[in-house]
Image (cartoon, rainbow, N blue to C red; front, side):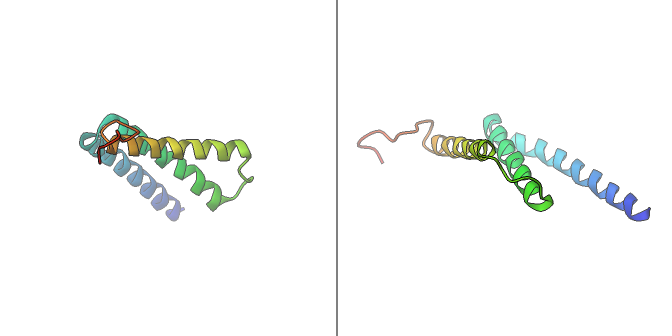
Length: 93
């Protein structure tokens, strides 16, 4: 019973810290960057949860969704690093 109390307390504390830190992070980055990071975080939680706690294997549709999410995050990262252009104009470095 006492372990359950401390486990619950630590879970609430961790959730509160995540909530506070997310507000700090929002102030440092653009909203779209925050949304992208949040999507990647959720994706990693799903994948890690499936690996840690077992369950059915990922279906082809699951894997396609994961790949699409990662591709979208990669494309956003490349586009924002290039100033909003996915393709570098000819003659410029």
